[in-house]
Length: 254
Image (cartoon, rainbow, N blue to C red; front, side):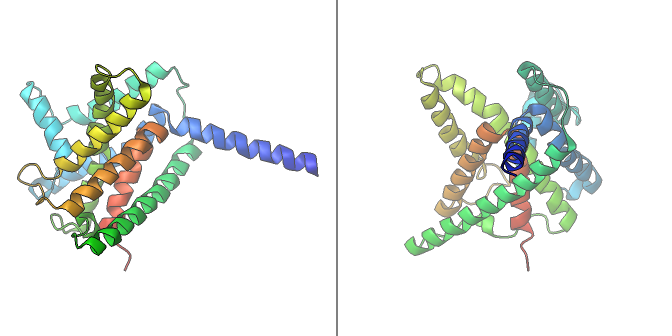
């Protein structure tokens, strides 16, 4: 009996380790976020002029347009290409278990609930000081129909994580590395810097929100939360958690 329990314990530990490693791979991230990416791109085309595109999507496509590249398919294809190229550099196997993808969805949902709890704690703390709570706790007013909101939330999960984590975190590490050699300082500095940029970006442009201390401070915390997930759990978990958190906030339980 003891030997059987030990064997089962080792089997569970091996499965957990296997999931932990596989779910961090860029290939797993690609398979996991691909439905979100397709839903966003196809959904915005179907909604036409009524679609509210994600800000990170607009900025990235404007950057590509400034470089003379205007194809609507380029950004989603570029997202796929980055993840495939990243996976190639890791020299990991080119296979992902379906169970890993399902478990990534469950993990993302759990982490989204954790972030939602952080949002409520932050709102309660700020209410004591008289500061307005984070606007993330309110239902989005820009896209009132259910499908339009879902499409936008999926876009936020994929493209905001693409811009602020997958692109900016490594870039920030490189830039900070010009002044500091310590890996811990480079990583901590990159997480803080990209979290500040992520928070500030929500107040830029015609669709930007009015600046408030409560909303800015929460977005900074959320940016740090997603950045830590990106570093520790990979792009897919960060994007999935981001999208599911937005869904939980946008469609709160009655």
